[in-house]
Amino acid sequence: MKNFHVKFTAKNLTGNAGLVHLGKFAEKLQLPKTLKKFISIERGHTANYDVSNVVMMLMMGVLAGVKHISHLSIIRHDSVIRKLFNWEKFPDNRTFGRLFELFNHKHCNELHQAEQMSREKVWSKKWFGRVTLDFDSTVIGVHGSQEGAAKGFNPKKKGQNSYHPLLCFIAENKECIHSWFRTGSTYTGNGAPEFLKECFSRLPKRVWKVFVRADSGFFNGALLDVLEEKKSEYLIKVKMKNLASRLMQQKWQKVKGIKGIESTEFSYKCHGWKKERRLVAIRSEIDSTCETKTLFPIPQYEFFCYVTNLKISPWKIHKCYGKRSTSENWIEWCKNHLASGTIRTQYFWANSALFQTSILAYNLMVWMMWLNTETRFHEEPNTIRAWLISVPAKLISRARQLILTLSEDYVFKERWLEIEDSISALNFA
Image (cartoon, rainbow, N blue to C red; front, side, top):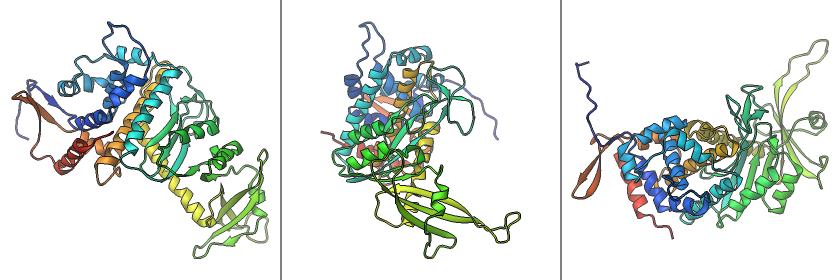
């Protein structure tokens, strides 16, 4: 390398120029005004910060890569972003925490309502008539004694205190339509019927058909009753406890063209159910070796069983359920790419509000990419952050105009301009 010297003298520089796209898109949605309208946290007339502005600040921080409240210094010391977003004052870390500690259950519901109003605007421009809802839960481990954190199901760190949020995604565009922030000791399916009803209430009016997929944690008769009441299609994995012996009694048929795979289907009424429902199962031979003291080889099987009202073959049902695994990627995007659940205080409802704010930031990115790019949202958030958000630029003031100048060698110039032009042309009624 050639010798060089470093000087910290440059002004009006930013490393997150791409946040302007998300800021413009949020303005088009009137998201800041919507947050101010719905969140009823009242502050004194001498207060320096409005809660709706603080929510927007955190969203932009999360989109820029913030993983902790202390990391908000990325935005706090970015004079360009603060000037463009008109944030003359920016709270310090302690003030950020105190402001979110003002949230309670009512205010968290209001945050959901603000998100829902924005969703309706987005879906007025682009929509799907038939949607797939993928339900799942996730474990967020904590190191400390945060309110509401408790020991529960935690496959990675058994015995660790955690939270256990419930989430629902729309598979067609990857947005998170609803979430519940829950204590770690809560079982996966607890409150699932009520959560399902809330998800249906959040569906845009243009949706006329719903297909629901979920794992065995949601194998619940009351939930199935709600799905059938809503005339929804569903595919839910069955809990295997006490089921293997019944499956072995069924008549199995080989799946044509696939070696070692057999299928069966039958009607069954579980304890507490109001009626029989269709169960389909797949078994795959995994071991045909002879066990000790047996004359003939005893085949060993791996079973997959589902309850469904889809009128397709068991093998197609099995393949359809397999597509649900992509929702686990979206949960990881929310958790690891956009800090859902990793930015925390000591208080439960504050943590719930922080979690929801991160989910809203995720949805804002999803909506922007869905409405304004041809590629929609195929890249993961970290990739979008790398090519669109974490872009160096300089802000110049000339003839009473602000000009954001980027490198002439910026490799994604065409995509930047595509998004910029598309957002400028957007007009929500």
